[in-house]
Length: 311
Image 1 (cartoon, rainbow, N blue to C red):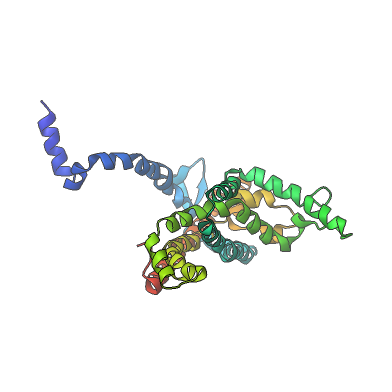
Image 2 (cartoon, helix red, strand yellow):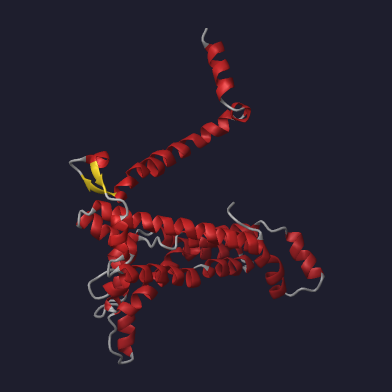
């Protein structure tokens, strides 16, 4: 009996496209709920960055202090060190780690032996599924000055052991190259999928025109990858201030701290260890704002330069 009024109400409220494709929207609904609950609702608490938060008073009852915590962070003696370390690791990662999955995908695409190709892909994908704790444990074990494989090899040539994990100058390289080993194979999946989708007639036409394998690579394969690579590069620049906390924290020690202190570890130290919730929220908000600005700028440049962009 109520189906008529309910149907009329839904017809008035919901757009025609939603009513027509309700099953597709229903499929998307769990994802929307996830983002609303996990990503957007917690933004309510961001106001503590502008307050002196007290658990007793609550978020609304805490005193408003405006930009006090931001100014404190900008005037902090560690400010430029944190920015330099965070941006330095990110730029090094983009410069070295970003092109390698593309290069690897191009190499895999040229392999004709299916058995060899399948096994190479499987072996290179595996490290991605290692937990960060296991990965860092492996890195520390390999680079140990007493029992590590690397220093044992150096000992065969009568060379002094190197204390890799305590050398501030080596932290960035260890972080980035261990990330390459772990994620290069997995990150190449997208590029391999793009290459597998290229029309084979393009290669055949190039061969008829007398193009060599290298020329086909340059004029067919690489141009097909450029739009995808640009999108991924935009994402990379959009998270330039987000160096993963867990891995840095596990690799960090008192001796390499001058180069391993990044914004994410600083937020942890100030917020959870120091119970300075408002200050750490301000630092985290500053980090997010910079990422937001960067992704807009890089997206604009990419759109002007290549016509490819996120929006």
